[in-house]
Every structure is written in C-alpha cells, then in structure tokens.
Image (cartoon, rainbow, N blue to C red; front, side, top):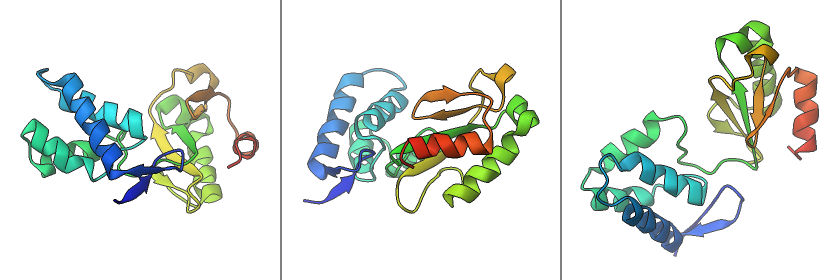
Length: 166
C-alpha cells in the first residue's frame, strides 16, 4: 500500500484517499455541478487532491481523467501536492501593489527560494498569490495560515515567518 504526505506532514494511505473521495462523492451525489464541491471536500479533508483520487472521481462522476485534472489545474485554489506547514498568501491586487506589494513579493520569493504556487525545498512554506484580502486601506496585506496581516514590510514578514518556525 503506498502512502503520500498530507499538509501536516503525516502519511496518507491510498485507502484513506479512496475513503475520503468516495465519501465526498456520496455527499454530493445527484447535485448538479458537484465536481467543485467534491474537489473542495477532498482537499479540505486531505490538504490537497492526490493524483490517486482522480481516477476514482472520473469513474464516479462519469468524466474523463483529463476533465478532472483540467479543473484541478485551472483553479489556483486546488493543490495536487501537499502544502507546507505555513501557507503564506501575498495580496497581488492593485492597492497592495501600489503600496509595496511587488517588493514584498520579490522579497518573499528571494527569502524562501521559491515562486508563487510553490513550496520551499524543505516543505515548510507554501507561497501563494491572493487577490484582495479586503485590507486595502492597510496595504500591503498578507495571510499566514488563514490569519490576515496588514501594513506588511519585508522585515515584518521575516519576523512573522520566524515566529511560525518557517
């Protein structure tokens, strides 16, 4: 039986992937347009959508594997690999860009050694873009593991990441 890491770094077995996938399919069975809610449910349970879930979803929903993969790869929210322990989202919207967001993004990429939609080599931090956190009056803004932070600077970001163990 093969295993794969989830976002907490523990191993997820193929049996667990199958169970989670089948449970999500059952929950949304018969609903029109159920693919997106099913994908959200799988990702919520596992932290990402493993490749081994795709054939099961295709079979259950009578879609091709390519169709399932196309949806997963089209929407930036879905992951096909586990996220790091820390998920850093940097706002890329206009207000944040005007207030130093681009420099902040460049600093994060350089400091972490990875670009957007990627995870650091040690698996600790995943860097993601986000488009407006609703903190425009306090730009630039970021989120760390779902917690918003405003008026961010490179030095504040470094301290925040250090406090997260990243």
